[in-house]
Image (cartoon, rainbow, N blue to C red):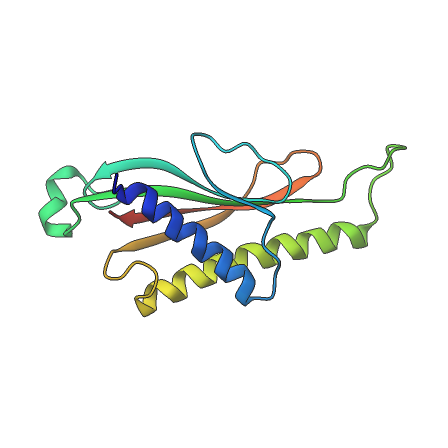
Length: 156
């Protein structure tokens, strides 16, 4: 079945990987579309369909013709890495290790978000379809995991 929701998810996942690679960052070993709520796992890059709607993002249905969107979809792009945590004795990690983790995860999200926006503006990401890239937000804290989530809305 030719499903634009699935194909758009694959496009977004490929763009996230490409953004990391172009920045010289090794992408996570696990990359996938994710069904339902994403479960954080170490070294994972996932794209999840969050919603499918009629009209432009955040626009009432009556504005469909004015906005030009017939339907849209919202996705979350999430990248999670293993980060330093307490050692076997319960001692916290060194500040330098925490800083290195913060730098890696910030580099991840910067590369992905920058690539999405750049490729969209050149027309290479989605052709003429509209895209809204939301803010990058930290992933929910879990022991030994750190990362970010970006929400994007796409005309489908």
